[in-house]
Length: 131
Image (tube, rainbow, N blue to C red):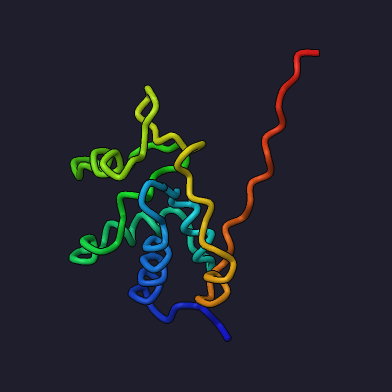
């Protein structure tokens, strides 16, 4: 069974379905969403899809999708204020605190049931030692 979308609308709907899974108080990156959607999706496609939502913006939590450094990529939409109201905190540079709020992706059961990819697990970062 192929999960390849037949048209742009269907592809965007797959993106919105994944974005709807990001819970309150969490954020995901454009790249995270693209990795879960798979099928050749990339961060730019996710950005285009979120910018094309129209009335869907009222039901899809677009504000929870940020860039890979935790930065806000939209302007004039009150994204940071909405995220702060949802409990997301920011550092002194204005980036979401990814160590606290980064979503680890949907459950494996959800991924299998809906025909998506699991979010690749990032290896733990090695701690530097001085000696």
